[in-house]
Length: 499
Image (tube, rainbow, N blue to C red):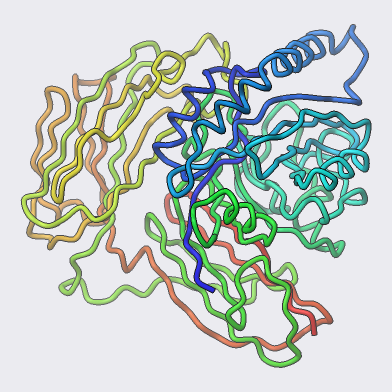
């Protein structure tokens, strides 16, 4: 079977429960970068703390959000259904069920309808999901059990084909994964990570989604899900969920594929002999390394092997803009023209505030608080691209508000790039951007700035390998992990091979 790759965000919040931004804004923004999404409403918390002396503000905040969702639920369902059209964009209905004891889970339906139903414990929620044909997906699983992280002894893959292992909360892959968990809910606990669940014999896939609370599904760098499906239809995407043909990326759309005897990721197959392993990675920037893991350890580590420079014409070009002062919104009007050649791909790397609950954080607001469409590509031809954007300075040195484009271009290094941004115009020979970025300030020191580059040969962004591997245990579990040099990651769902 041949599948196509589609991108989504299954976990994004807005003011429909608690959060910022409208449902309309969230759906509009999602459609610029994604093929599908879910606007999730905070709905229930059966074991919420009752100590008002200590947790009164949190209790009130959540109860108000739950009541807001209950009032708006039918409207949310209707708006997501209206925004959906097969082969164009799909919105799946969902709501969030919190739990200290069992960990937080989102309930999803194929849709377009979903009943808003509570349950007193995880087994009851699972019965509701199975009876209605829904699935329930645990998220920010890496917090300790009993503290809203997952408790694997209560996990059942019958209603949970995958788990969310990366979001704004951090990375829950394993002990040494990138992106620590820094929210006030606490640190990562190995016993709640995906690796701990797999070590206990559970079979589940992995995804990433933003858990963004600012009405910006697909916010770059905060988590996205890749899905291999027959088509962009509600039925086909849902079937891919059930079959675990899913994987996680931090933000860049890294196409990461692992095949064993032609079986896709998420599969369970039988083989008592050597396994034919195929790895195919098409990244958005230079690849640092690609790792194949078997039963929890790395068995192959691959690096790119670039060919002769003089034969190359295909590159990826990164353009990043923002910076400046936090309290000074800047509007960008930009146009890029290649002297010759073609822009073959435009990957938007647009984001909202990279903070789980952005409202009132340090008194800071950004463009997504006031603009329906803070960033958008406005024009594209063979050798031209134009876009508009509005940014504020970075929230801190660890909370970027910069925006970016990753462009595929087909042109020799003898070409030039002309860039007009507001009152700035620069012409850059492409060969000067090879492996390096150039910074340009629009209004002097401490003003907004744009970085052009690096220009990276596509050969440095792709890797294709084949090898064979022998059986080791009654069941061997394989998965793929990809790291780009720019800090973006991808994690595949496993393939299980039973002897």
